[in-house]
Image (cartoon, rainbow, N blue to C red; front, side, top):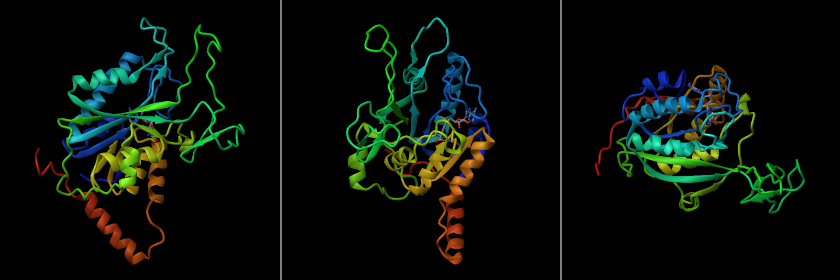
Length: 309
Ligand SMILES: C[S@@+](CC[C@H](N)C(=O)[O-])C[C@H]1O[C@@H](n2cnc3c(N)ncnc32)[C@H](O)[C@@H]1O
């Protein structure tokens, strides 16, 4: 299997190309459904919710197959406003609840969760160029302009403004991830570990229209997952790669990557983006040696655990 590539295919076809037990970390954000209002290049957003969940279950069961023992499945997920007029009558679709049940059916072990804080509703300090009123938390700007009104100032039907998402982390078969034969030594800095071990992560969201994509997640989010949940040189997979964010994060974290997306437009953007991550300032002789090393590393087989429990 050749690594460090982005495959343009339907997710189920793409996953079939990957061997069993070959991936250490899956870092992904699946598309939503039920008229969530997000427009992708190549997907009907109006799939009925129950049908969507069945499809997602097939995808995640394939994900389990490709993970090695102790490998992690990190799913970034939000709830979606329910625009379907069905008997469930849910105001929001809490996808994370359905995902939890799905993972139990597939005996994936719930390991951890991080709440991604995307913004704040009240100003702290600092100024937003847009609303002149904003804030910064740990140096990140969060705009306090937006609000959700619903029945404003009345308990009738207040509409909660969502300013967080979940990152749910599941483990295959056991919680411990042993290094594979070709894994590098743990490389996370102590200051980062102490910061990122927290269940809340305040990270500035990505620009909404990066590469013409409505909902890319930030590189920082995938970078933290790669550093925290797998070893250097391990393989990180994103079966819904979009703009290539996970690949960029994997390169920066010195991990290998595989990406899948069914949109030619996003795949082209992702490949260009990944290309820009490669060093351009080194002399040609060094670059070509690096290239050879990279190629050899990308082709190296991924083996199962060597140490056992
Ligand atoms: C939430 S977005 C992921 C965004 C990505 N994390 C990023 O940072 O750009 C979901 C992605 O799934 C892709 N997608 C939707 N249905 C798919 C399918 N059947 N097979 C492969 N990819 C699909 C969409 O094109 C979209 O890019």
